[in-house]
Image (cartoon, rainbow, N blue to C red; front, side, top):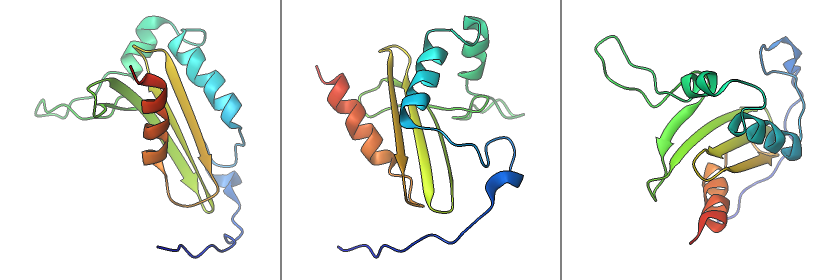
Length: 127
């Protein structure tokens, strides 16, 4: 199947807070992810709080912490993710806390491509 490629329309993201208009690289996202896992930015208790799924009023656990989606991957490993995007670009940041693995994927597309980031993680985590 062929996908039609076209230039994204211009958009001014500077009005969006907290993330709109910020620029980064995959290298910087990996550094940020490692700093989160190594507790170089936050105390371990704070990171644990961010990575803990929140509960609804009725006690139902969500798959969302504070700014992070939390779930198990297909192999049952803990996976903490955050994604973002705007017109013409998306970002995926995957953290595997127990394995100490960080995957960052930036794509010049409105599609998220999370499946590719998960495949890259599987390559690094293969036994």
